[in-house]
Amino acid sequence: MNGRAQSGGLWKEFSKGILKSNPVFVILLGMCPTLASSTTVNDAIGMTAAVLFVLVGSNVIISMLRNVVPDRVRIPCFIVVIATFVTIVELAMQAYVPPLYKSLGIFVPLIVVNCIILGRAEAFASKNGVVPSLLDGAGMSLGFGVAAGILATIREVLGNGTFFGYRLIPGFAPENFEGVAPSDMPHVAPTPALIMILAPGAFLCLGLILGFIGWRRLCKARRQSAGGP
Amino acid sequence: MNEALKEKPIILVVVLGLVCIVAAAALGLVYGVTKVRIAGEDQKAKQEALRDVLPSAARFDPITTEYQVDGKPFVYYEAYDASSALVGYAFEGHATGYSSTIELTVGLSPDERTITGIKISKQQETPGLGAVCVKTGTTKNIWEIFSPAQNTESDRGWQGQFTNMALGQLGGQGIPKNLRALSGATITTNAVLRAVRSAIWNYYLSRGRDPAIAISGATKKGNTEP
Figure 1 (tube, chains in turn purple, orange):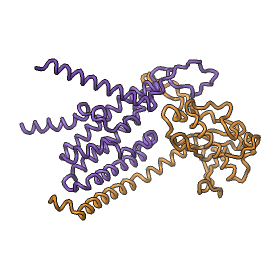
Figure 2 (cartoon, helix red, strand yellow):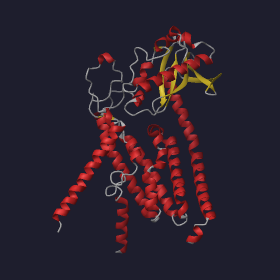
Figure 3 (cartoon, one colour):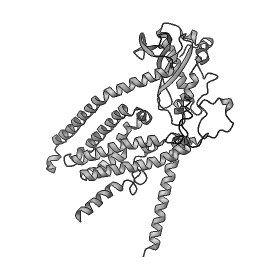
Figure 4 (cartoon, rainbow over the protein chains, first blue to last red):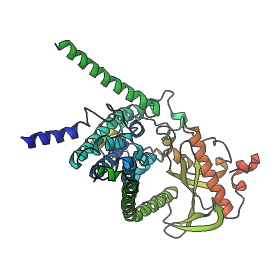
């Protein structure tokens, strides 16, 4: 019986990051990498893989060190551990998946200052055991992935007319630069909403999603208070 | 560990020091493993860029000149085809764009008067605007996943416009007349042009010749800036 409660607890540590306390949509951490790497679905998946490795690795190491590291130097220690994992990811990406490294560019080293990672180290891994920390890290990274994936899908489809780099509707893409002479170009070429790929589109999209989540929560609270005693 | 003991300054130093040493050792190990691979990937990318700008070449011989660019000797490549005939020259250039340094490779015909092609190898410009400079026309239609084997045209995209451009046409400044600039990304367009021009400029100077004669636009305007 005790064992069942335990495993239920572990499952909760994993699943809470995906929906209930999604790091991006609910805790509102790590906005910068989410907005920056969600221009295409490919980038979002690559970024999620990098975050998954760093977050799981640093959570495990930090939870192992939690009883050894004195309180006053814990933050520097966490940063060293996180920076080490980020550098490992950067080197590995450069060596084995250079196209992804090229397209993510500066955002890979910037994972060091991703608040999700330091936040989980401080709020969870430094207070919990190795296994829960590992699951927490995995869940939170997947939550980040879900958020970045949703944003990237909306932005890539609307802003670039493609999904996973594949064109969705023939002719509906910024083809102005692709071997079409200016004289052949129709006056009103159907182009996607470029703004969605740019920074304002990212904020717009994120804001609408956050608004929707807030509205849902409000509705739920209202229903509960109306139906309650 | 005793809590009072844990807060002693010497313990703080030792713990932090140990964490750093272990981290450094781990990084050293990873660096050692990936170093060769990264160098190989860089080399591969460089060779690909050279082949892109001079598709007819079979072999590239690097030539290090005495001319210094950014404190380093300028290197150009002599390209030969399978029958050892000279098919052109290639060299690298760079310029600062809107949000990154744009690095590219330029190919020149054997008579050194025509660009055989350029290949932007590194850029971090705005996605959707400046980054369109490396976009190729081979974006696949999503329905082709289900019916492949069609539309394999190798469009070189925006940078393909530089293929077969005469140096006189490129000119010394401004945007050449029949080059379509990237809409919404004038700074990127100008940076690419600057990188191409300075690369050609450096190449000519490294061979001890006056680039202004080749770039006729520059002599006409009396502008000797690259």
